[in-house]
Image 1 (cartoon, rainbow, N blue to C red):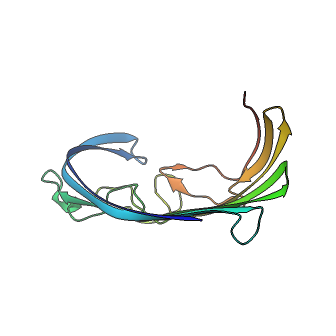
Image 2 (cartoon, helix red, strand yellow):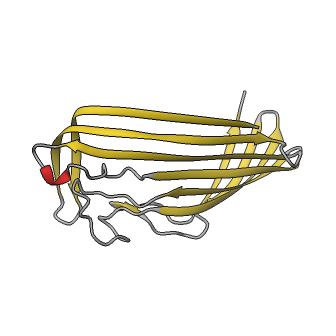
Length: 181
């Protein structure tokens, strides 16, 4: 098993932010004097820990992204940077059912966030807004041999509806065929 911890701090000066307005159909570009981001991430990876044929991977990250100076739009100072969730997390486990067949289940999470510079978005849950999400995925993969691998899967099993101005995909089925040579 491996645990990794990371921390970061960043100051961005003279940023240009693209601010679309879904309802009016317009887009504005806003200069922002200063943005400060700090946060961290904790990641865990294991192979065969507990069960011989099980691998598990997870990460959780936090970011405090704030507009610290904005002389052109002072109402946004101290507000969260749009479209940046404070919390994100992912976890997935893969179990080798046979030497050639793997089954993976996973979960993805992002906390609520904003779309407007002054965080005045209002109600959530539709086009033009931004939402947090919690979705589950699964995949069955078969190592066919001679470099071929096939997989079938379902992303967003529960057909969760969430938006970042536009809707994210609902339940999605896929088939994947890879050849490595």
